Image (tube, rainbow, N blue to C red; front, side):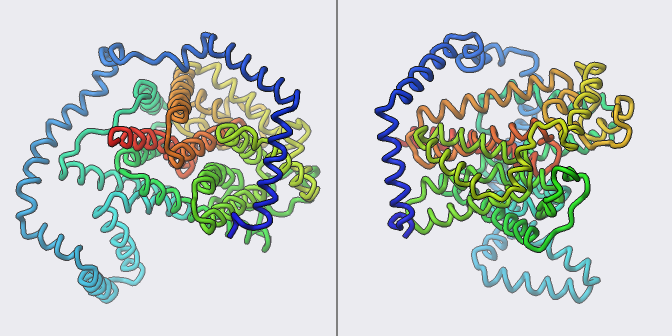
Length: 543
C-alpha cells in the first residue's frame, strides 16, 4: 500500500533527482575529496591506532592479575555447577515432579484449569489486595522461570510501566531463569565479549566507588542498578538465538514505546500538570505543558524515546511488507512527536545527532532528504517550539544558567576527589554537594552532565573506563557494518549505534546513567550490538 502510494513515489523521485544532481556537482566532488582526506589523516593518526587498530592483546590480558581475579569465581562456580548439571540431566527427566510439570505445560487447557482453581482459592482464603498481588507475582514468576526468552520479552514491554524496584526484580528473575536453564542444559559458558578488559575495570571501579562512598547505603542502591542492568545485558546476548527472536524483542519494545508515546500525546492534549522549574518563566511563557508520560520527568521520557526511534527506522528499512513499513513509519513518527512535546532540548539535539549518524551509515545521499524534512518541519512548527529549541546554550535562560552553576560546583568536587570520586550514585553526590554549592537556592539530584557525574562519583579512572568501554562498543559495531551481509542485522547495528550516540549527546546536559529504567535500556541497547555480532558469526559458520 505505502510503496505504491503517491507520497512514496514522489519521495522516491525527489531522492533520485537530488542524488543525480549531487553526483555531477562540484560541491559533491569537493565534499568527497574532503571526506577522503580527513579519513586518510585520521587513519594515520595515533588516536585511530589506539582506538581502532589496537586492542588489549589477549595474551597480555589473560596473563594479568586482574583477569585471573575476574576468572577465579567463574572457574570455581563452573566446578561447582558442572556436577549439578550432570546430575540434573540424568535424574530430573525421570522424576515424577518433572514429568508432571512437562505434562501440564504441554496441555494449555490443563494449565488454565489449575491456575483458575488456585486463583479462586487465593481470592477466597486471603484478603483481596494480597490475593491480587500474589496472583500477579505468580503470573510473572511462572512464565519467566519456564522460558527465559519470555522473561526478556516481558522485560522489554514492562520497562516503562513498572516501578524501578519491580524492574530490577524482574531483571533478577530473568537472570535466575537463565542460570537454572543453563545448569539444566549444561550450557555454562557465556558468549565471549571483546570489550572484556574495559568492562571488568568499569565494574570494578563501580564496586570500589561503592566501598569508599560517602554514603555506603545510598551507593549500594546504584550498585544494584549496575548489577541487574549488566545481568540483563549478558542474558540478552546469550539467550537470544535467532534473528526472529531479536526482531520479536525489538517489536515488543517498540509496542511498549508506542503506548508510552500515545499517553504522552494524550497528556499534551488534555493539559498535564507541570512543575515550575521545568521551564523559563520569561522565555518559555508560551509553554504550558511538557509531557512525561509514565516517567515523571520530560527529560527522562526523551531519553527513553530517543533510544527507541532508531530501531523503528531500522525495522522500516528492512520490512518487506508495505503494511509493516507503514506501521514502523507511524511508530517512529509517533515516538518523535512525543519526544518533541517533551520540549527537551537535549533530547531533540540527541535525536538530530542520531538521525544524521544513522543516515550517514545507511546512505549519506539521504542527508539531503533529512535536510529538506528539517526545513519543512521548522517552517511548519509553531513558534513556541522554535523559541524553546533556539535557547540551547543561551546563558540567559534560567535552565541553562542553572546547569552552568551546577557544573562549576561539580568541578570543585572533582578537583577534591579526582581519583576516587565521592561514591557511586546520586545519594553520595547529594551528601557532598552542600560543601561546594555556589547557588544556595537549589540542590540538584545530580550534576546534569553524564561525564561530570561519572567523574564526581567514580573519579577519572571511572570516566576513562566508561569511555574505553564505549569506544570498544562503537569499534565493534562499525567493524560489523563493514563485514555484515545481512540487511536486518546491519540495520539493527546502525540503530543501536545511533541510539547510543544520541543518548550520549543528550548526556551533555543530563545524567543518563541515573534512573534504573534508562540505565537498563542503555546497556540493553549496547548488548544488541554484540548480539548481532553473535548471530552474524553463527550464520557465517553455518554457511
